[in-house]
Image (cartoon, rainbow over all chains, first blue to last red; front, side):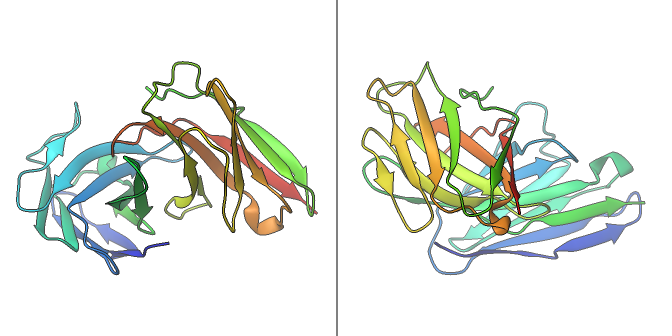
Length: 118
Length: 108
């Protein structure tokens, strides 16, 4: 399978500061990347869809001014959590999508970034 | 909301086959069935996907019923490293909706 990396793997920041998380597709070009959030003992929740060269599409209830997404190249998307608060503490996971057989798609996920806001 | 229903948990003895069911009774004709798994504190790992036919790869087999309303993921010889949450996803396109999945525990 394809490889997607995330950096950093874990970060601790103070309330009110901003944190940037990078997601890289290492061995294929991804026109679309996705950002998910996962709280303890819960499933993944899609936050936004990131398309190279255009604005991200955010899911309902996700503040686009708080979670800034940039997809400047076919292999890199970044998520910036602005003015972080303790309730933003979560496991953030990105994925990169490529087309498979027929009309199917394969999403490859990064290892995740654990954000703790103190 | 996820379009699939899975049992919340299952146990399997090490070395035996693990059969994980998934119900997707409202699946549309052009929707694919995908399986992923997530080991604790890691990102989900792609396992397999299919449309109508049964599929097999080096990790698992996917059996889809003829009416496509349910499927089964088969891990032929489960190992302790297969302990994870397994997600069955039905979708057309790239938007994946994750349900709660099945927590598979492989027991020694």
